[in-house]
Amino acid sequence: MVILDGNSLSIVDLVAVSRKFSGAALSHKISKKIKVNRPLGGRKDQNTISNAFHKHACGERRLGIGDYISLDIIRGAMLLKANELSRGLSGTSDRTIKCLLDLLNRRIHPAIPVTCPVGIYGESGYLSYLTELLDNGSESPMHVLLVKDPEQDVTPEVLPAREVWKMLEPEQFELEKKDRFAISTGNCINVAAAGLLLHDAENLTLISEAAAVMSMEAIKTNRESFHKKIQGMRGDRGQSETAKFIRNLTMESQLVSRKSHVDPSSLRCVPQTAGALRTLTSLIHGVFTHDLNAITLGSAFISDQKKGILFLSGGNYHSLPMALIIDFLKEGIAVSGALSERRLFRLLNPKLSNGLPPNLVKDTNVHNGISRYRSVAAGLMAENRILAQPGVLNSVATYEDENDFNPNCLQAALDGFKLVKNVKKVIAMEFLAACRGIDLRKEGIYFNQLTGISKTKPLFPGLGTTRIHEWIRSKIPGGDRPGSLTRDLKSMEELIQSKGLLNLLKTF
Image (cartoon, rainbow, N blue to C red):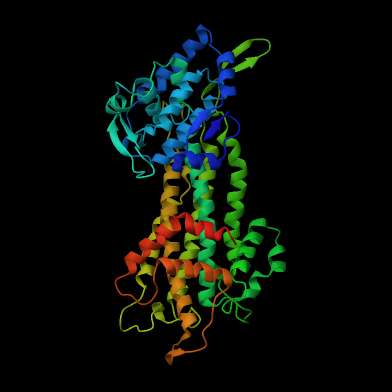
């Protein structure tokens, strides 16, 4: 259970509620504080709220089009909105916050389309669906996403809101104007998307490093490049951590050893490249924690010693800070995929793989091995170049140019999740190719351009790499098995998504 007080929410909490369906509750202390200190606002303030709400929120209800936003982003936005309102600066009652959390805990969510009107005061076009659900769920013609039992199936059912209200009878009451305004303004959906993308990028970094080490073993990389003294010269913490991870996995390796040759950048510079993404995500993580507990409302009640309670409008709703974070993450994720594709290419090319046979098969007359992975990976890289384009430059002015700079933050985040999916496919291919390369090294298979395949002394990978290799082989059998490309790739993607691989990698 995640307890909300408006100040201490973490990315771990966000992921737990968004993807693992953990419950959330308002702190009892905060609830009492809101009841005591809740600002009511004068007539002038109420008129300001009424005009603002009528201007942007009412006109944008149910105008979205396209497929629905993924459930984890919607749940994250609901959690962050409840956390934001718990700060007590919106004038919202504790009952409103508890109703919002009741929907979240009962797994009833507004079905929000991917494309909604670009509004002022933040992502009001998206958040107006949440306002509608809280205010008018039992009578609304809108749809909701309902997850009945997350332990059995997390795929949400799309049902009419009226039907869900009759079936589950969640609490509902008429919202005040300031409640509607507070719920439908702000940046919480963008912050939720950015936080989940950051979490995915952090996990992807570790997985991509493990795939790189497997490739190093298969291609017999020079260990000298990862020496502690060399890695410490630059002073980059992420680089040093990645190099240490490589040394831990390749300890006692017969494949990664001191050789006279110089390796290509995709292998030799893994500490510098993967380490750069470690550094990037670490820096963003430190900054992003503040945004999880930020106030991004279009307006708020502020206490002033001389003038009492003031209702002030500001620009905290603007999404550029989140858009910049998302764009940085997108570029880092795309680069991870590009480096993985380069290593995959080397594994499959006998001129570049240091003695591995073409397409990693012992008999090329039988079938062409996993050469098709190369073309699939190239296609994914082509798509990634488009997805990684900076979203902050795609501004579209709306509302008679009042909203004259909008970086389309959420759309950029959705591209980021597509990038993660594509890169995981490429990394899955690299894992499979590297595992097959290690299989061949352990058999003592050696390929020469002139003499073909011959037998030599079997060589074995490092202690850590061996554990990863054996774990993968326990799930995906090795050997030249025609017709298994698609099945093996799907299985490897599932392993990458699973907790098992991440938990194993975190032990090194």
